Length: 187
Image (cartoon, rainbow, N blue to C red):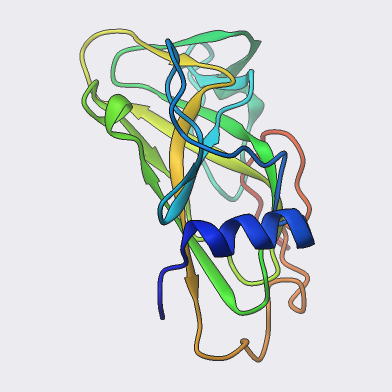
């Protein structure tokens, strides 16, 4: 399962809309970098944040998720409370090819500040805005900057197209827009 290069990522994005909007290059003055890199794509975090808080004594339950456990903010700078968690989304909309699996890693700029990103793999033929999960592991408030680089996606191409894709299974997070909360079918 080879990792795909900048040339392949560019071709898939420009010819098939794999990443929209697509940005060339990675270096940006005065902001956290984003765009095409040698073997990946650094995506931006949008200005929509769901900040976890415990003002109402909420319990996080993936089978019965309540919106009492967070506050919504639309802002250029999100402050993540100490030892807390934020949901956000990518600016970019992704359309993953049938023979490709995508994994996400955090950017070193944020990792060195104690901010960890977690994203589950983007499966073959999944599409949508990626919901991003950021943890502030420090005892201090930490800033996230909207419309700047937040994480890097790596594209792994399978030897053959999969038999059943995410689209074929009618996955519950298909074509998501905005920050998408947890879902359990039939719960």
